Image 1: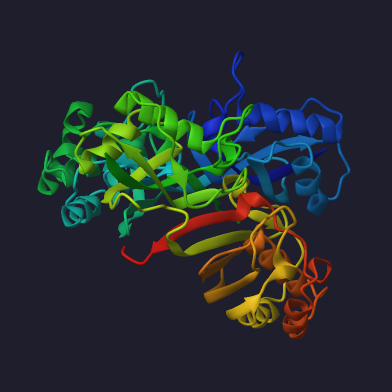
Image 2: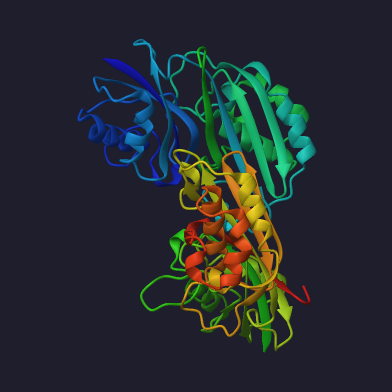
Length: 247
Length: 247
């Protein structure tokens, strides 16, 4: 038996998220179907992150156990030949038998993309959140600083998650503007359900002047979801990288 | 009567090109349908460039005559509210009655996007040409220099076009690499049918060592389509801008 980790990307718009569902096509299902064609076995693949419907990935990580003897460097070619072209495996690695792509991840990096102009962008319509109103970027950058560090992020979590603690550490969070595009890049040891999207929604409300950037520490401290901003839509979010102790 | 110019973008993947067809959905048709909803009239819209199926646009230009009294700055909002989100009107301008978006254009700018790596990119699958083989970028940049200037580009034209002369002037052509992406940006007074795609295909063959960069002048001089490289696929091409004497 071998434990294979794969790094993959996908366009979220065509799938109902990562996790296998009964009546909807998901990325997990597509990868498992491709693996069945390649190995002849019905395998279960474990994803590091259960990305929601519409969320994109450039660096999702997943693993599966297999008896297949296919050389590890040939695995991406084999799986890709059976996958739709908006899902691509970029790398495969042989891991110890106890490696678990979700439990053993030590952190993740996400980006969130916003188009800030009058009419949006035809080519980014399902890849960035279109925000029409003018934004105060300086205030947004100041607000964003407050998320860095170890905090209880209960105010930045959607209900429906069952994790025990809502304390998380944000190692780095950077917001920048490139022409009409705003990009947030955020790296942490873990993220609560919808946490990046609520942080982004809150930053946009800061940019619009609805929330003061000075109030972010108090909002975090309150642990009250109502005090934070809206949940930014799924289609602006990208899972960029999953970290492990032994990369 | 008023003559309105619009600047628009679209994702080419969902449409059978710009020009209205009998049994396929095109961008022109979608814009004309939206205009009918906005103005109540069945108008004909003239596009500066008849982009092929799969070709994207960030700056297509088009014009139409209308009796509608809608203020020019409200036109993009009105049309966009009736368009699918992968077609967006970015600007509307009032033009003299004799303005013709195609006949009066003085030049165009295109970009062509290539992904050069082993497995392609899930998020660029219908937005860039995936080239697997290693490329000699230096040779490609040298080859690209030869296209600049006024030349007879008969060797870089697909059959099926009825234009009288195949002489065109390339004002600027720049090729650069950004991580695994290669981008060609080319600006000229006009382009023959498939000219940018054949230039790109030729540059890729130079990068692969199939064509020497030193042979480009001779290939141009030959006026023989067979001597140039393959036609790069449509889905890597972007119409970026259409130029006019009075911008």
